[in-house]
Amino acid sequence: MPLSVEILTPNRLLLQDEVDELNLPGTEGYLGILPGHIAFLTNLGQGELMLRKDGQQRYLAVFRGYMEVNDDKVTVLAEVAEDMAEIDPDRANSARDRAMERLRGGDAQAVDFDRASAALQRALVRLQVSARRG
Image (cartoon, rainbow, N blue to C red; front, side, top):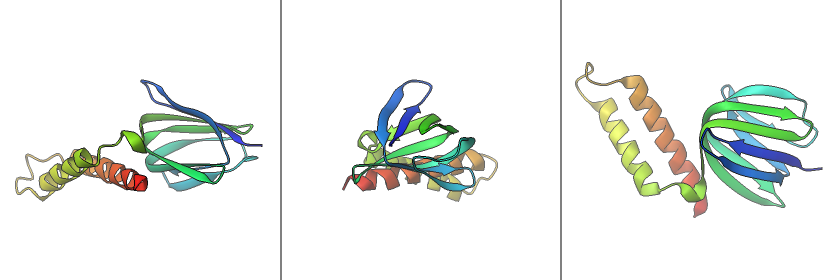
């Protein structure tokens, strides 16, 4: 029996499908979900979400949120989720470069390091996911 998966953001339903396997980032590391998994609720981290269906893999970038598993139904509520086809690698590279420049900047007073670090992590996840297209 497959997993029924819904991936939602505040703005849209990104995905609703039945899959064989789901791997996604939790706050303490990656989680693998297969049919028959115990029920639980957890916080999402940020990273690459992988869905496997009929031997094919699909990747998304997800950033923070929650995941619930209950009776072979998985609901992912993400602050941001993007399919690999939606990610513009040039834009992600530019965001990475801007964040790295801010973090290297000499004026520590003017740089919000937490914000620049988060921007860098988002750009790196997007680049990792977009590289799966090739």
